[in-house]
Image (cartoon, rainbow, N blue to C red; front, top):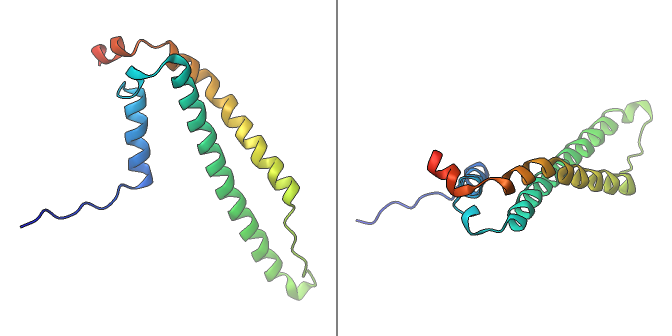
Length: 119
């Protein structure tokens, strides 16, 4: 009898495993300080862009719904300002980098083996 197959991990499970591997020393032992800072910054940028994209999609869908609901009032035009949306995404990426600077610096200074021995 064969073992039942496991379903693929959810995004949250994958993220938690990756994060614990990185910060609990599984990956951090072999990384240089620069690589660790870069990994943390990239994680922050990806999360910022993912959340910004989700927010933009929800905002555009909500605005479209409002325009459709107000058609009887004479509002029939719906325009998505592409330039402004790209500026917002760029600002979110920059905010992600800025938000990661402190934690990345702190993690890079951490002696991973000492932290693992203490836990």
